[in-house]
Length: 405
Image 1 (tube, rainbow, N blue to C red):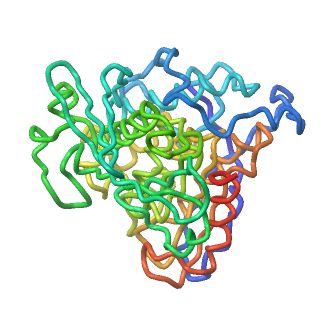
Image 2 (cartoon, rainbow, N blue to C red):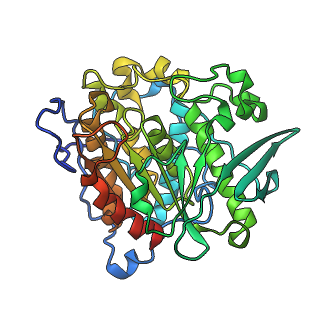
């Protein structure tokens, strides 16, 4: 099994003085001679995105022990250590395999399988400015659609910002930027939203395609549907869609902030993830949230989002048996860019947990010399999901650097 290690996590940005006091879980980035040092020339060759959904598709799953076989580990796991505990990633070319291990673990223990789809199973078309994608599995087909809103400035093909449910960032950030928009309508996949909607999984379009995955959590299904929209864009190409599929970002807030993380983590064609106030089950580490009161932790979340077996097996102190944590969900985005946005005025968001998770995750980017591709900003004094002007600059910085380029 993986070994773990210790050191206090550092602050990403100051949290208000009234923030809840919480135990800082041990975590240390192993400074070891086995980690290759990357010079500027080598760093410049590390991609900002890929043209395939999963570069690790060729790798088999690691051993996935039963809960009874998993050890109790209270510190945050080393995201660079192989699942079998036999060494660590030593160079960037190893990362795709390590990322694949994390993806297998998260699907197995937490959200359920995100099934692969071949190009032949996807048929896309445009109707005016609406992208329509038919996905066929066996004898069943579901249809996803989304309206593309094009900018009034710049020239096609345009970079694209996809809203998970909706774009949660203020419109004024984009008035002078040549960025197109579209929203991923998650209800086209499973008919459920935040604490409401259809809870009968047998009626979900996704389950019609994959009846054996009826126990999946919504976040695997939503990530699957999100990827099918990108399949459609790639299939039609920029001359038809006016979209540059080399420049795609995803953004959402609250439950949709979690959705943005899962969608971006599980699709490497996304260049930039902006997760706004994602709360527990998003960037926050389950282990850290266990030490806090009044937050969304593994015992207090919506189990339409996750596999019910997650709570059954890892409730209360069993959370320390998880062989991964959500800093590794964040790390799956590497080498692509991610910006985490928090709001400490809402205790249940567990932003201190997100901060510690961020510090642990960024060691992956730092190890490859690309620490400028991840950041975290936690600022209070504003309503939930309403970005304050004090965070505009960091959002613009990430949009300009990793989406517009």
